[in-house]
Amino acid sequence: MLTALSSHHSHWMITVKKYAYLLVALPAALLVLSEWLWNQFGYTNLFAFFVVFFVYVLVPIFDHLIGQDPVNPNEEEEVPRLSNETFYRVLTVLCLPMQLATIAWGGHVFMTTDMSWVGQLGWLLSVGTVGAIVAINVGHELIHKDPLIEQWAGGALLASVFYAGFKVEHVRGHHVHVSTPEDASSSRYGQSLYAFLPHAYLHNLLNAWKLEAKRLTRKGFSAFSWRNELVWWYGLSIAMTIGCGLLWGWMGVFYFLAQSFIAFTLLEVINYVEHYGLHRRKLENGRYERTDIHHSWNSNYLLTNLFLFQLQRHSDHHAYPKRRYQVLRHHDESPQLPSGYATMIVLALIPPLWFKVMNPRVESYYQGEEHQLETAQ
Figure (spheres, rainbow, N blue to C red):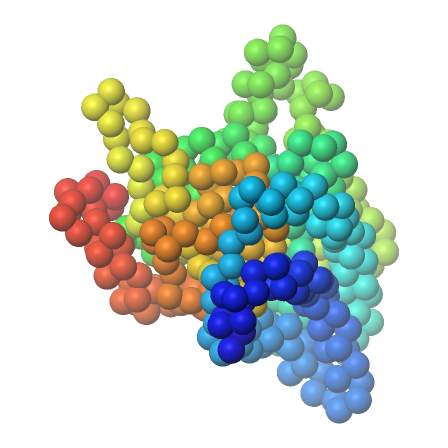
């Protein structure tokens, strides 16, 4: 029903989506609901996993019940209007105080609630999942934009999960080398998630520093000068870690680092999903073809796209990285994931199941060009 309506009433659907992006606040609100539930009914260790259950079980179900979003904004009229609407920008920037409040309140609950280690694990997974949705996903949107307030808000969001290197490496590294052997965030055909993650962690950290050092060297400055933005962002992360330590001792430090690890690991899992097995063909001149809508997996499930500010329209994002989230488009000709990101994260955690679902899709994409598939391994 929703799909049929949206096909005939594009303007109405875009208006509905505008306010539905407020769903980004729901995961953080579910943390509060979790505490209310265990205060009302007990079962603290069970309800500590409530956000995890919602995101990775309920959202995939509702994704398929609600269906996909076939509406693309009209390029002549709607795209210019939507791109300039203040509402969309304010919503992303406001995610910064929401994330900081989530970390502070989540830490208070972690320290003051009687939980077993199982409940503590559930709570850290829940807070880290909120961080992946709010800090990293929204931070990703903001660091692609030019206004300083958005750049700073994006950097601070990433600092809140100790992954500020992403601000530099993603824009100047990943978007340049995506879907090539030079990019550690582009997973290879036949590569398991667990083989992908260690390399992604290390490379993306080191490459961020190399890219920033190269930028400063070109300008005649030392890589260790105050002009190195990574010094400021990692300094902010360290300040947050110390703040948690002053409030709650060594367990506070553990809390901040653990929720950060979960959040940025989910980012790398999404990176694994977004480019698995796809690559840009090398041209006769030795250079790679231009990045376009065929070099990222696309997913157009409406509900998850509302939660993630249309991150799943990833093919359009890589082809046109400056486009704002509200005007990203779906392309039928892009490689399509069988479900939304929440489902694909679960599949990626189980390599045999992931390969069973995704390898035939990669092979189908390269049908007739099997030699291309071989070079992707």
